Length: 217
Length: 323
Image (tube, rainbow over all chains, first blue to last red; front, side, top):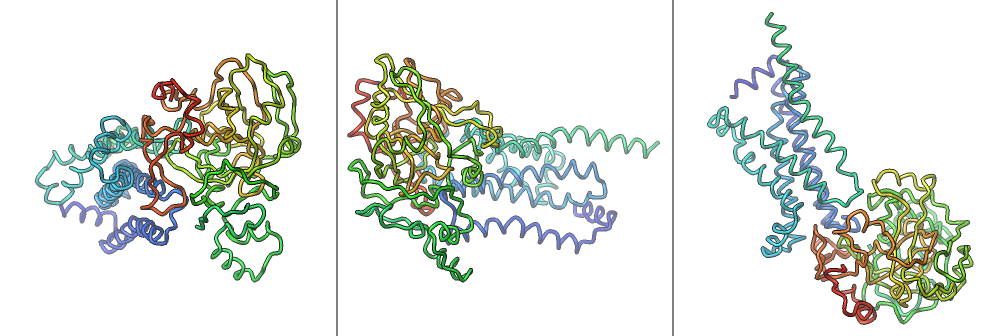
């Protein structure tokens, strides 16, 4: 599929060099917050409740990256000039998974204290833990099949499988809502963005179809 | 973050505010500005530009034998910058940012309901009703974090005796200020105001239940519930209503804010109890505020460690049912 991306970038007059440069920037943007968090940890400067700081930092990071990766397709359909941003989707998805792993590790280490019994107890009794776990488990096969080889091997099924990203984000948002207290509305903005993207999917596909039909006639 | 052991003498006697804030930051601030401010309030603002404290007035207090000893105090910075006070926003940092708009003078507390001497008491008279004591208490939030705080106040029972409740008064209800002009963030949450909390009469009369006017030897900062709040150290923090304007004596268990919102999560009693989990998390352990990342976890104590004094209030009660 390598030819596809070259094709797109040629058409959109985005040089591969620019893409590489932008990729470096995206890597930096995704890794810098983690480096900053680690620095604060070393400096013992994670705020009054360090455990909560790390929990929310990694959890929100996961959701933001996941939703950002879901925004790629609708944005491409709306603005064909930006079609090349497809080349950043895998990266964003993998970083979402990376943040998700950090978030899971925070739970396993700092909440469950690495106790399997405590984790089983949580899973059997707490739906917000289950929702979080489901979100992570749904990301797992996506991360495992993110290689170019898998994309080629799975063909059409790859796209089908990777629609799980929507379910994963939905489970993640549910986890967020079930985790905060009643009356707390901090999950509202990310939830709105998510549902706008869900709505955008059928709308943008209709839009791009219409454009294709017009161009043909 | 500086945490010190509870000393033998009172904070109000010896400790200028600068000392219980971070010394290093203080030095930095002093050097950076090339100033050594003379007033305590001025110094505290130098120390950390992020410090927002809306209280300065020193209180003279006596030490109380009811104080918890042997535990490190939570820093003044954390006590005043990690707050749940939803009238000023739902983020822990919101009250420190927003509570400056609260006007704590004039302030009148209305005592009403089933009492022989209903009255409206001005805050300054209320503070003089009984000598102020410094009481160091553990503070355990239902969200599984905890602090150790040197409060200033006197037993609520002193006030209750003065207003002479009628025999049919079985509960005491506390109502907080609900003024959108002073608390614009009230509208950001879906809670119906005013904030309401309540205690059974024997709980309210218990000597540990503190009518609280200050902390660390000074009047309460706005974000901590100025000018007067209740502190019930063996219950989860939300039972301890802030910025109280009305104390009502009633015959029936009053409606209380969190219990109304989610009765399966927040019981009316809400005694600290490691054996009854919150539906969404365990209450067996807690995170001590101000400790470092890997040292935060500690075991939660039954009745927050005040069982010797209060367990008898609940003799014969199923605390799993009446959580």
